[in-house]
Length: 122
Image: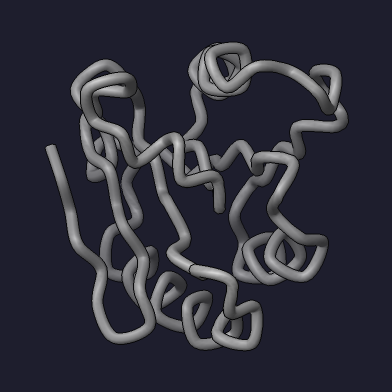
């Protein structure tokens, strides 16, 4: 099954386009729910669309509030107020996605995408 992503409001057009150019289906929050929606609504919409949530929002890394086992996957880009690292993050993410092309590879997992590694929490 082709990878599908639900891009949180904080995900830029650049990131969305890079993912689309790589052949992935990307739904953008603003096309589906109000831009001021609560995080619980955001992650619920990702699940409804059978998609992996992609976000810069650090709230989604809280595994107590958002236990990875309850979701189809969460990808948290760890920018930490350094937007200049986004191209490096995306390159690493694209490499990972290419090596793990099935939706089931992400179910129940939180991927913390950093410049030099991707940490996985389950």
